[in-house]
Length: 238
Ligand SMILES: *Cc1c(COP(=O)(O)O)cnc(C)c1O
Image (tube, rainbow, N blue to C red; front, side, top):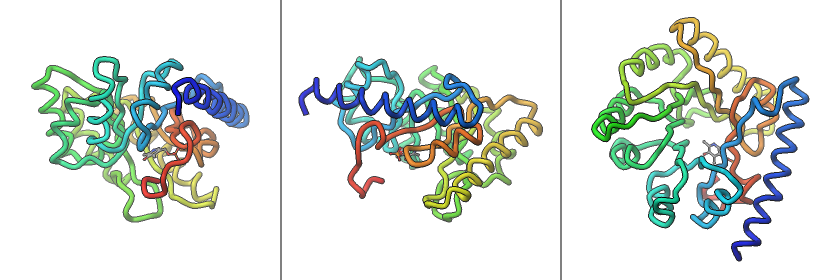
């Protein structure tokens, strides 16, 4: 797609998404500025990222380290802040530490310790969110809510990881009540953890293109939006 058309298409979808987010905020009695938008550029090329940057977006969600590497290679010094939102394999931790500015899918202490070590070597620290498993599907990643306190206590000893809050992916279903239950579970996990640890966890990353209304109603501070902004993805990568 020619650059200018891509930019226009992106801008139009962005306006529509922002309006839908604002409506969801209004319905929930919240202010639009309370909910940030994280564009998710996975499966879309570096040209899409550049077009988003031209609209002023500075952070982009990605779920694979290799894909971040490829886009980083194209964008070079002009690359944005990469936010890792997908499952991280142990053998990719070193690469991830060199590339990402934020990690939202942290769910294992052992992997966090590795990442912390690499970041300390590089004299860098990053914001992290702990991914909590709230979905009905067994295969979804994330720490079970019952193990969150233990994980957070372990993370408090890792200086290069700044824990800012929690993230979740809801059950993939059309059942709105089930989706909302997932987001309520994350909000409750946050409240409990804040009490247990006496540490603020201000950020709740929850809600995607198909379920952000429910997430905003349950207190999301950040929605991760891919297809509603960039267009449909091949089903393989959904
Ligand atoms: C792909 C993905 C998103 C965005 O999904 P859309 O439905 O395209 O908005 C959000 N969060 C995670 C963890 C993802 O993998």
